Image (cartoon, one colour):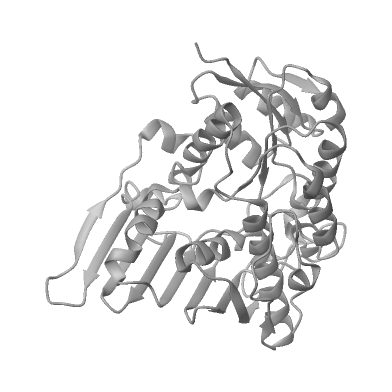
Length: 382
């Protein structure tokens, strides 16, 4: 018989609660302990995981000997400090939400902590596990003959309200191109199988949050951007982000082109944000268009409705947890390493700098080991 796996969860706001709903769908797994300092969010978490114990601190979670693995889903700027507390006390298998860090000065600290961490660390990059994007990744080589150009477009709703309004300020999020877009920089590296060498960007606060004030302070997060990334192998990628495009038929559209053809993945946004007057959201699709005159071939990629209803990421949170759970129970290497998570943040910080200064930002093209995170790269050394 499979032993039940007990999760300890640190942070149960909106994303943390999505994790709770998906863990509840996993066989022989449950959330046993939760640390969430906000009373309203803690009570909401308890309603999702009624058997979990509400703890008063991270230390209290770590002291629970029944815990088999940990999840960090707290606000972005807390990740490194909480990781450090775990590393110093009880390094269990860890799933840590993106972005891995937000401040460039934390990069070297993160690498030092990782050197002594004895359990697997998996960075939560949910977009990799959306079923249409998984299909895209599996087929991109054959469909294109090897991609040379990659475009990722996300047209979506604005940032949602969060406890303490932390997601309205760059100092807590790392900036929109870190908070929102590290997912896309991760996909660029994964799909193109290369490291970034140069980034240019244009971004700004165009429409959203201009009239908001928090303790008298105006938000400084951006809501629109173009980012172009050049890779070591000669490939190019572009990100187009618009966060005032509610009602777009698809929230994410990813296109890769190579000498043999083109492949596209279209992913609808969360059903709960879809405008009701437009009917049901569309089903995700993957379209392959060869250069020879055969015509495009399209396939719909449905997701189990129960899994789809458990979160806002096209079922990906469940599929990610299922694979993380295999590592917890059987051992092995995480599919999304600390290197992957750190590199995505480096690219986001470099894009923030490129957009702010109007200058191209160069990144160290050499990959680094899981326990070595380059501070220079995180700073985006020009």
